Image (cartoon, rainbow, N blue to C red; front, top):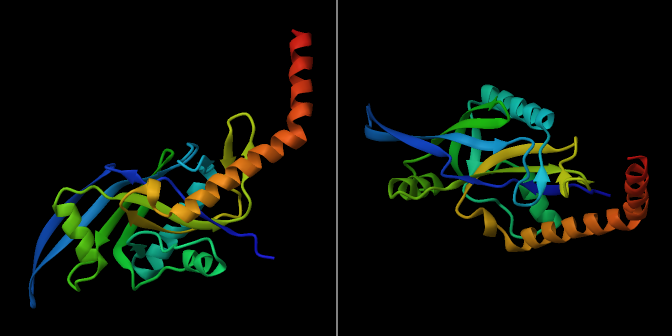
Length: 220
């Protein structure tokens, strides 16, 4: 049985800037737009109450940078390719679709607990990259949101957050408009998942945890 699930991070909006260069080629004048800045953070809860451990995020960032070095870049999608939490949708999560790519990530690195990235917007074919570039030129600030797959998260009763598991694999980063409504169906599933984990933990560990607190209080 496949118990993998989609992991969508909080998108960081307005945490990056852009530069645009005019390049003269044999085919005429072209434009090169580069977006760069903060892509993700380790050890901090996102809007889904999930925390990415530092070592895990560092490992996955190195893996993606290896992909970039080998292939010349990492395609980034225009919005997450998720319409539901069906098995078919989960398969789409795991693939880097070229037909919906709007940018090419050319560099990723960890700076402390922050993932820093550089992407070049794909323009010139009237595709999703041209649409993204038009939005940015108009002053719109898109969000950068990671996409990956992993097993069951671990609930931490002390913080109330869920830790992303070691078997997590990051696929890519996508550009999104509003991270709070990127996918209402999947978002609802994530909310339900969190409540289930929280209630299950309290049900099986609540009494024991309470007894430990009493023992500590008596010792003091």
